[in-house]
Picture 1 (cartoon, one colour):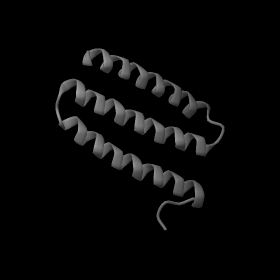
Picture 2 (cartoon, helix red, strand yellow):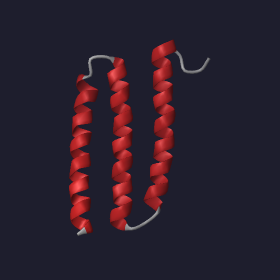
Picture 3 (cartoon, one colour):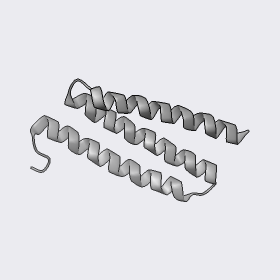
Picture 4 (spheres, one colour):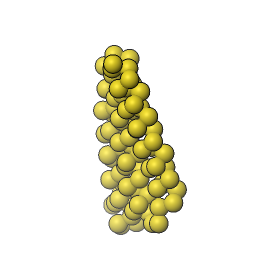
Length: 89
């Protein structure tokens, strides 16, 4: 039962990643691309957590937490660069 749910969730996340990659490639301006990158980070975190559930280990959850922190910092840096033209003042 859980294996079927993991398979369906994995397929849905992979479909979402493909659609996000399309938005990343076609996005009309830079802000859409930054939002697509942030969404891609969230979807990758979901895949990592799904792998942790599938394999039954807590190591994947720690990796997902680290990936979330790095993703947040990079999103803030991209937004700051788009608004001001530099990251470090």
